[in-house]
Amino acid sequence: SQENVQSNFETLFQTITPFCNQFLETTNPQREKVIKDIEDIRYQLEPLRDELCQVLQKHFEEYREKLKPFVQEYFTKERENMEQFRTKLQPVVK
Image (cartoon, rainbow, N blue to C red; front, side):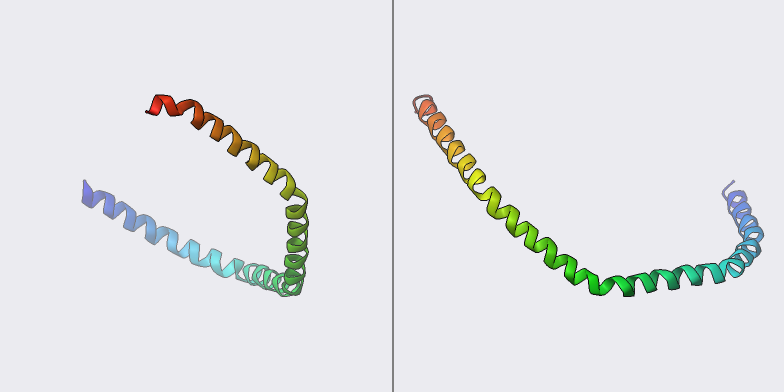
């Protein structure tokens, strides 16, 4: 049974191999063109990448400054709530 499966796979592989080779040869120009186009786009976008990083960093800093008071207020309130909760639970813990 195992030999039959292996034999079937080998036969299938031998049958498919010429088709696959022909397919690869036929599509080679298209694949090369797509690869070249992708490399060209990557080369064109590379200078813009640094600029984008700078713009994003600037926006993150602005958002951080605008959100900082809200976040601090939230943490302060949560600390107070936790302290109240701890005080209420202190007798139970003892």
